Amino acid sequence: MGKKAAETAKRMVLVLMTLLALALAGPLLLGLRPRIVVSGSMEPAVPVGSLAYIKPSRDAGAVREGDIIVYQAGETMTVLHRVVRTDEKESSFVTKGDANSTEDPGTISFDRYRGTMVFAIPLAGYLAAALQRYRMTAIGILALFWTVSVIRHLAGKRKQVMTGENM
Image (tube, rainbow, N blue to C red; front, top):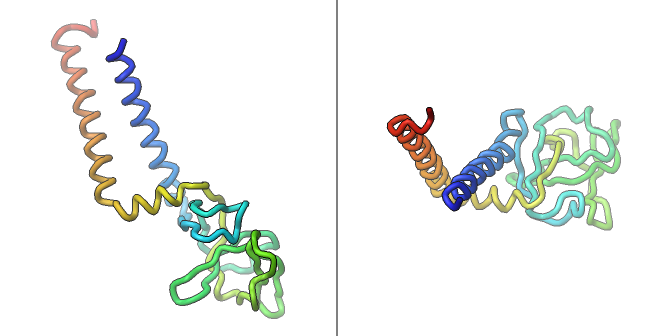
């Protein structure tokens, strides 16, 4: 019974790793871009450590009040905040972090708009950051784990054929 439980556990780990990889990378196939949330300005809707998936766009006309958008705040910095108002005449947004007591200073011109958040996975940003930092190690461990699993599976099939266990 112990051998069967160990095999079941190994399969469960493989399935969980595959599901995790799909959850983190799958949205990329749909054109979404992940952003790791590093500030608490959007809590509780988007907690620190979340992985926010953004639909890239430059079409500011599609943005509505209440949408959570990403905008360019500096040369390399972007901000994830909620749209409070849109000023069509000025071609700008007024934004605010949910946890902030005041609106962001000034307005955000439409040309600084980079996309709209589609969804966020709480805590997944920590995992994504670790995977970025230790990318090659993580890839190596996953490749080794999957390779060993496949070899063991094939070896088990070969044993079944040679001993006639599958008849």
